[in-house]
Length: 434
Image (cartoon, rainbow, N blue to C red):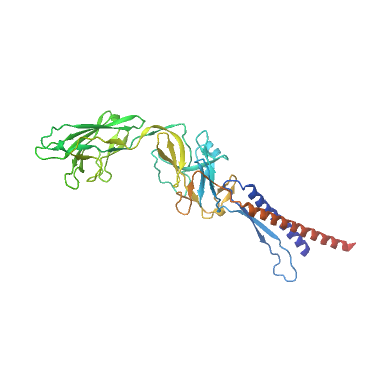
């Protein structure tokens, strides 16, 4: 019994060290694999008949292996803006290109800490192994909705419309004209003043807001009051707003806006200093200045000085590049010099990263041991931030693995020696009959 248990212990030792050799081989083979997490084999002794003091039976050894997913490899810089890595704790969500080609979700989702993504012929952001980056799509104006943090149902494969033009209509106009104070004094001729502001319409066309300023001329003194009528070329020249502007004449606020009264159209917002103008199929915030503050519309004893301009909007634009910021927002950069958010890439976290199930291509899936996932904004909570132009290197330590290789080889050889010795002893026992 004791001799046979020694044989069994030697065989168990061979199996355990072979398992360790497999993990070492895998680690060395993947020492240059981006995002690879080191595998580790652990040994556990087995006790048989441990209460007996008269004889000893060798129980041998068992081995288990695990992947150290919570370890982080160093980041290296790259020239590709969509080479992404999580700097710290957390993962990106990815799906497969096959699932994307099959059509609408739900998509099978895996987790990855890094990936070299680029747009394919269909604009889908994927890596060379067919892993597709997932994110929350932004609205056409670049805003983001409220998405569930405990579900990936709202996430979509990231797709870039590389060959499509986009509109970038004007949504804000700054009006900073100076109106001559002498025109609102008694005896003035009541002459009107006109100016125009160019803006970009919803279809990329150049449109015009036209303003007509009419002074209120009193019988005596000064009214410091003007009526302004605003027309829009995109609305067929229709009047879209009429307002009465009154300016202060005190020592501390002379020439600044004192009040804005609505005659027709939307009301002036004193908090923002803007009037929301209803143009054709849209709205423009016309900033005329805040009450009592310098800037915006003024009335001073100078000549009429029209200073109006669109503060945003461009002609039709085309995508030229994308980039991700520290908040996980994927920005599309256009050839007209503007950018907008097209996706938000959340960072996925689980309570026990080492409990994730490892899959091919440096991806992982959630398991009972890992616990449920939660989606964080990049850099929030316990998670790290997403970094572009970066890849995570393998966590393999070549020096340590080569050292382990030597000790494992020696341990394996020693177990072989145990088996040989037991075989010789059994042979001697057999020879007793001769």
